[in-house]
Length: 203
Image (tube, rainbow, N blue to C red):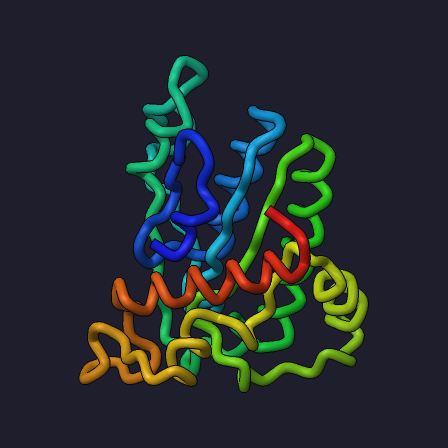
């Protein structure tokens, strides 16, 4: 995977195909609060059309309790997928990006407070993704997050980099540029990000 060159020591992989960004941030926050001085590597996937579902029983029917671990919660974490164009208000581009940037800002503050290193990249967002960085819901968080050397914006996403270098997704015939990244694409993207982190002097 793209992040293999950034791994030192034991890898705890929270990657799940189809996961939402909300799931990514919640699990990372749980780990960050439990540990200190670790390294967190985020590959933000599709921002639109995904919401997390937690399917354990409700109230007295809930199976997971204080004696259980985070790992035992994970089988109950799923994703509800929507077609964004049929749920425009729910996945309005301005709201999606405003939420994402505020989540990155909050996560950065938490990780730093616990002495963690971190890096966040985009996997599936092209650089021509539309939003207005001057919109009042976005402006402050956009400027704050994009000033972070640990954040690599979507102009350098895996999808964008592979597209520019002619590396097609595994399922190109079905999904076009929005398909799943090949091992070649993952490895190329990892080298691309390593050049960026070396230039910025991080990790």
